[in-house]
Image 1 (cartoon, rainbow, N blue to C red):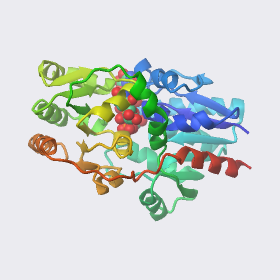
Image 2: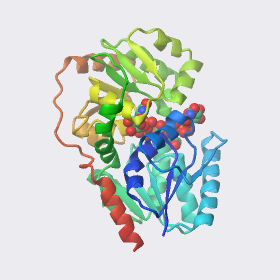
Image 3: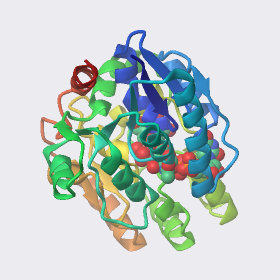
Image 4: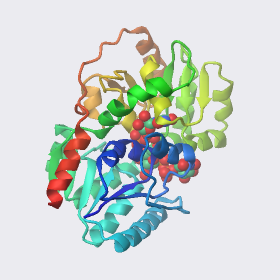
Length: 355
Ligand code: UD1
Ligand code: UDP
């Protein structure tokens, strides 16, 4: 009985790593190649000591519809070849939707890790993807009771389990090594920034607001840039604005060990990432995040006061950065995303389902 486990992007590799590590011989591991640069994909497979994928594809299309069709076709071929007992996917990327559609039409059950996230922001491709996948999944692993509630309200047909988020497991597994191995150099006090959400960076006005706000930071900023963001910054002539700003240090996307080190040692975080809003709540990281978006799909981080959604208005961002920099933050002891045993629970539920 084979478990077909599919990843496509950086966060899928990181969040499925704790599960991949625990599956023994019965896994077929596929990387669709949605993220294809070494520092967005293979770097994580190597660093987190995961087995090499049994299948690794090159997707030639970037447009979502065509990219999803290519993924459906590739995963359909794999399914025909190996006849898996179940598909396991994580999150809300095009890889997750494409693989799940291929499984559905081949009558292969779907296990969806990180089920039930909702931003209620219909501009987001991810919102479309996760709603569709939640409705065709057989096992839905919701990180929190709140995510479970969303699924119940939508009357999904599969079985829902609250399991916590595997990213907390990943941090517990990799932080000690990261603190030993990371050689990244930082100023004594800095803000860590990441930006890549399509609604932010594909919109010229919003991207310009964000850049013009962070260059006004009172303390240094370290900004590992997602390739999509880098290319848009260059197109809009904003790359040089950031490069020339003495307070902003642009670096290439870093590996997980370096990123964990950066999260652990920064003063606070400015981000539009989903995963980072969860990671800051880990008791071993414990940081505050300013979320530069109009909405969030991680309301638990906001409710527990690890994060604040501040929108994308330039003046507002500048004022929030100053306010956060001047305040003494008191953060809760526990994460709303579980205690780091999510991967054990998920795997045992998958095996129970298969037996
Ligand atoms: C995708 C996910 C998003 C997730 C993010 C994680 C979808 C719809 N979006 O967004 O939910 O938060 O991954 O980082 O699935 N590119 C490169 N090299 C790479 C990867 C991407 O240059 O290795 C560039 C390409 O120009 C590509 C663009 O980034 O067209 C967008 O990549 P894509 O995977 O479509 O979406 P992300 O924005 O990365
Ligand atoms: N991350 C990383 N290196 C970086 C930036 C992020 O390892 O340079 C990690 C981060 O710790 C988190 C994941 O990548 O686990 C988040 O990915 P991203 O923000 O691209 O996607 P999202 O979570 O928004 O889907």
